[in-house]
Length: 193
Image (cartoon, rainbow, N blue to C red):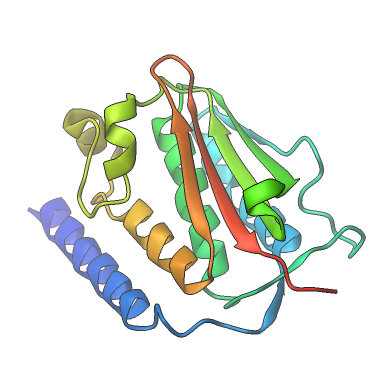
């Protein structure tokens, strides 16, 4: 009974949070934010969760640089941007392979993504069938109900990510196939230096 009440309370909190984000979606933040540092801080904050599940998070290109060398700024809300990466990395830890590796990589956009920076969160889990990909950011949509129930979460994390990215003039790219793990790439426009 207590666990059920706690789950309902959490669900209401998440829905209220999503509602607030949707209300502000058309108000685009303009404050410059150091995106590499933000992602680095999120990774460090989530390492205990990874360690607790026997998984690991790796950043091959030293994304979370402590100095400002190679820093890239995006227009954003300091409280909201970390939420995007927390949701995606937590998902990768929850739904990736048992004791697997989550890789967080950085890239600059080319061609249609020129002027944007990309942060890819990749897991080595079971992957997701193509037909599910377009629906992943829908509220409450679940690929596997039994796995979601067992790992927790109301199925709103990716909906929140999508609305936050829309507010920040960015977008989410999802690439996955059964047996190939999953790659979620966050694209955000870079502020000119």
